[in-house]
Amino acid sequence: MNENIKGPEEKRVTFNKNRISWRIGLNNFAKHLFSLSTVFAVLVLGILLYQIIVNSIGWLDWQFLTSNLSIFPEKAGIKGAIIGTLYLMMIVIPVTLILGVSTAIYLEEYATEGRIQRIIKVNISNLASVPSVIFGLLGLTVFSRMLSLGSSIMAGGLTMSLLVLPIVVVASQEALRAVPGFLREASYGMGADKWTTIWRVVLPVSIPGILTGAILAISRAIGETAPLVVLGIPTLIMKIPTGVMDDFTVMPIQIYYWTLDTVLTPEYAYLASATIVVLLLTLFILNSVAIIIRNKFQKTF
Image 1 (spheres, helix red, strand yellow):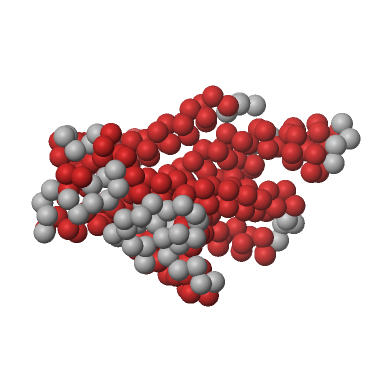
Image 2 (spheres, one colour):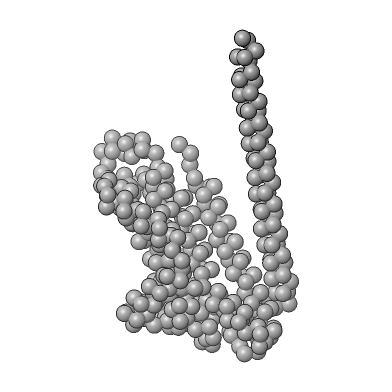
């Protein structure tokens, strides 16, 4: 009788041991698979960076940074592309920060809970994953043609602002949502109104998260090419822009142009590599600033 009862229990114990062993084996397999994937990705990235840096040696110098575009590779530079990028960011940064942070404040602090608010939040989150070329088509239709801005810096800046605006809104919402509720309650208890509480209490605490998201969004705007190609930004422009209504080019477009012309002029590959190094250094600096801001000013409550 006891043996009949013991038999099923032993089977269950054996079955559970087998399941645990199988799960441990699956976990080890997944761990090694993901480790190999990481090593492979880092290896490919290292090879690409090595190739780019080697090709840029001898071409990346002060003359390259301060010279205009030229049909002669040894005289060509990216001064116009750098100035065009700076002009572009002069539009993208204020438009994105003002609209993005204002939208996040309204949705998190003023809008009442309901279906409309949920729909707006879901659509904003979905816009952050829309392919960049779609924003280029939108900018071409609205800014270039309807508003007759053509391929000017203003059209490019507004288009890139639309591209990164959802990222800033979502990051700002998360930063505002992370502010502890007792800080708001303490401010209200001291007699402050809603806007004073937002301006004096909520925003100072959420600034690190907002700035981190904004800097990462700006980094994406600097490195994007597809929307500007759709807008018809010229790949070959000799003059330096002097205003927001001038035609312009940026570093990603310059890389695109030199990469295409490598077939005809092999030296353009070295110019493209040097420009990539400059662009990567710019993005690295921006991302480092975002990390420093987050670590230095982030508070734990």
